[in-house]
Amino acid sequence: METLAYILEEVDKVVWGPVMLILLVGTGVFLTIRTRALSWRNLGYAIRRTLSKESRKKGHGKGDISPFSALTTALAATIGTGNIVGVATAMVSGGPGALVWMWISAAFGLTSKFSECFLSIKYREVNEQGEMAGGPMYVMKKAFRDRGFGGFGLVMGWLFALFTVIASFGIGNLTQANSISSSLKQTFETPTWVTGVVLTILALLIIVGGIKYISKISSVVVPLMAILYMVAGIVVIIGNIENVPQGVAMIFKMAFCPQSVAGGVAGTITASMMKSIQYGVARGVFSNEAGMGSAAITASAAKTNTPVGQAYINMTGTFWDTIVVCTITGLCIASSGVLGTVDANGDLVTGAALTITAFQTVLGEWGAVMVSVSIALFAFSTILGWEYHGEKAFEYLFHGPKYNMIYRVVFSLIVYVGATTSLQIAWKFSDIANALMAIPNLICLLLLSGEIAKDMQAYQEVIRREKENRC
Image (cartoon, rainbow, N blue to C red; front, top):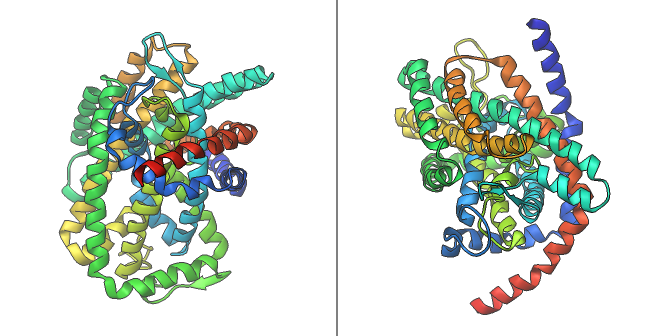
């Protein structure tokens, strides 16, 4: 068992190493240049479209859920422990400057997220139950076949689907359930088995209902939990407002200095620029999943006849996740003076404990409650979102939805295992699968970049007409 753990640890270091991070960010950079930075130039349009009343309606065209529900269901899978635990870990291991590199990776991730969602909507199918079936695996199967190398597309699509199913049970289930039970046990002394039973029942009740029920829950829970967390975070930042200028200065200083030692509100954190880049990009990608292909699966369920328009809506997921929520966590930590503090054992305080400590500087014990409840809500919503990702990948592997109910029930029951057992090997294995999902997806995006740029440019006329009508 120790040998297997060691092997998985080494493989994990490779698949999430510099090459993977360069490939993820590099693809975003290439696509941004290829599309003439339209994702940046049209971000305001995308946000307005997301928040419009029309996005909450079923709209026109084929699909299962509203455009807004497609976004919130995708956000359910991405807004999770990475926004609380991941940011804190990055700022300890990579220094405060890691936050800047999270922003940079998210900026290029906007185009990656747009591209994978656009392609998945364009090449989606209708299954035998009349539901939409889409995602990178369908893009690889259909788009590559049309270009004369269908065999390559089938292999890549099958691998992507396989890794997605594995990741859904690990990153999307076991780790999230364990984060909830650990957080509630630490803050409220709730037994893990009680948390496990409650989570399993809730998961069964929601997941068995399928995407329409999941989307209804997500469209209410995701905005509510995000707003509550952001409001609490802003209160903490305002409460430490005198430290904000120094904290922001330290964030930018340590992002670009070859070797820096933080001081003042950042304690005694020491980190090189390379460490800031490594942890910032890695935690940023883990948080918003841009380039991984997961959000594209949910985007395919949206009721729309304009793949580009819906892709713009889903693209904003990266903005809300990293630029907004992760920034609030980062500024709370940077302005609170708790970064670089040590615990009773002399170890640096990191992860959820660091974020809790930051919130406590202004909110007291309510800060610990707020962060713990946020972790629980964020993580549970991630379970719901990832169930749909895994289900559609499972459906692809078995050539139809006839076994989907089995997947839903098994997935829900696994929640109890995650809540009550620490499965480090399973976590590491699923982390590897999560990274391996990205490889076929990124290859697909690069090979189809010309098609993405062409359709994106053509849609500019639609945006121009909408702007004229508003005026």
